[in-house]
Length: 313
Image (cartoon, rainbow, N blue to C red; front, side, top):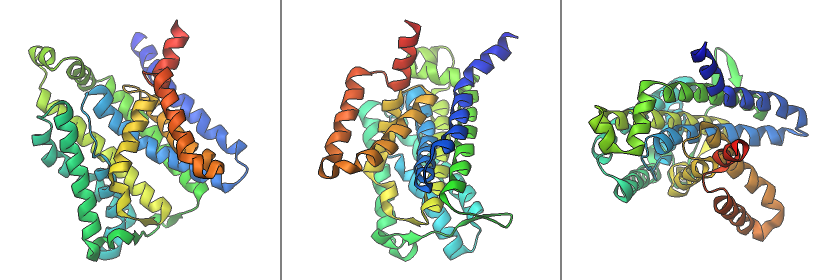
């Protein structure tokens, strides 16, 4: 009984997000809002994976958009040059990202602090450079078009369709993340985050756990990148750029590190606010920066953890 109650409470944020997903379309006056909602869900999915790495394992990654780029170009290059279907491109991109994360993660995850941040930054920059320079495959800085996703004869197109596809994927990713957090691996990650020395004394295989969560977070980012490319129908190397990596980190920090629901809130804020401030024209970026600064000053733990703390006090 206690276990069931714990599981039900842990998955309560998933139920809340599901309710919001279902009710939001009732308030949408046009298809444009479906597009914004789909983008929120796609970036939230990537942020959930990054939060597992940063918020629970305590490992900083400033090049995570590199995996976004791998997934995005997998669904672009695969159908265009290899003749594989788009859905298989999503799988291939996820597998390739996992392999890259495994190979790259073994040496760089031995680093700590700002050394690790710089190493992951270098990885992200390297991926962006490769995508820009290999014009024969990627189209260079101009990018390339992406074939639409087809599943069992059903062509996935339109903002409203992608809204539901991205939402279901996000909810699935949240459930998997919560289950991982509640598993022995999740408890080991939290121990590593608090103190690697203490975790090692308790018998935690630190290097193995770090590598495992790095690979998992890379798969999350790759799938999000594939969805983003398929949704937009066109992709450029900017998807793997440094600013995109910073945006993902900002989503995690703004929503709350160590909070899966916070990843969704952070993604919603950073996707919706720029759309809201477009009416300000030249002052759009100034207003966005001021709002983010206000959040960080008054909600230092992140939006969701701060709200939880206020509710319990």
